[in-house]
Image (cartoon, rainbow, N blue to C red; front, side, top):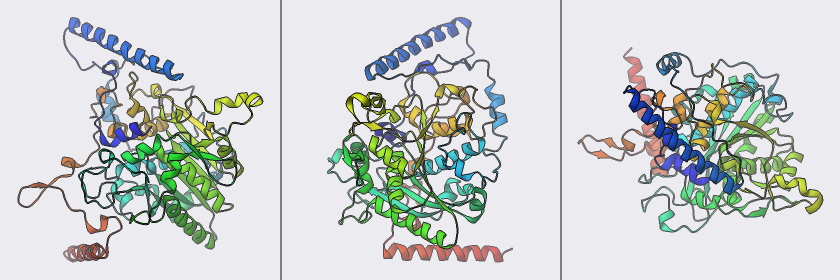
Length: 516
């Protein structure tokens, strides 16, 4: 699981298989085209046989659909049409339906076919989870590696998420509490902002306008997936440990990241668990005191989806009567059957969005999972068996005409942008990809290589210009210094610099206004 998430941000992703390459742009002789088609079919068959062999080895069912013929598609007309339309649909008021959309009836009757209002809410929460990747500083040569590149007041503005109508109130930091060998450490530098902590997500709350539209004050917690090698190491622990006061158990590595803290660290003197619950409790008490109805929605991708489940469990135990929903993407199993039962008893609603070709949701418990429940009469309830929680919305890479269908592209199948693209185009399991899907298709290739070549969208295109280097006044390429306001938890000195910087900007804006 974590390896694929790590590749999302750290490594250039190799093309999944040459069998998925399109040759519609080749204008050579018929003989040359025939040779290319033959080579392509041969390579594609090898890729399919490899996928099937791995599937048999792991006792999984993985579809390897035939290569999609896109020769007849006029991609130039498609591109012209798409770039001339908005990327979002108009927002409707869902205030009278918010409880059903938030999962009060476990989304019964809303998933297949997919209710349009629910689709937009799923994409909204998915974009919050995606923000935890887009703003993460994963540059191993940066002194702020592992932090968020922007302060919480401008995060959504920089990432274009202000349209969603939420304001970030708090950042969350987490640590992996294991002793790491030097080659596994995240940063290449001896002196960094933090050796042991990572920016793990944020807490946000709906503004007044969005609150009126959705019918309640919505608090959102977004958790980041795996990026740092230490998190990758933790994800492979695969040991269950007790949580709560009953028989519930959860995966050791996930629980360790959620609860780890250390007095000698600057950012994790309190754990991610303590940080998030302190802020959520504060917000709930504040808005309830105003007489408002409040909900909590927790989202995350991959490891972030696992942390979202732990967060939901703790919130349900801590804050009585609070409607709590989890919307996760590509999340692994987190705990045993007792963990699932306790979440259900506490009223936590969980919607798991999964892609059929993605391996991560099949982990951990590849063999020992909820499928063994049919043997309960013989074995009794097994408290060491991993199980999924909640309703499942299953998507298929093969449903989209814009995605490469061949090969065994693990990072592409697991990418959150692939998930959001498929959600945006999903109508039902009985119909094709919707033609009026609005979300920008180019976003799929931000961190992988999943789009058909005919679209001419580069793979892994989302990166800092010049890989973060800037040309200074002397013509030398250097690492830039961050604006003081974007330095995580600044010292007294940098805080004073940030205030001076803000004052300078304000004065410049005033002078500019006077000119007009």
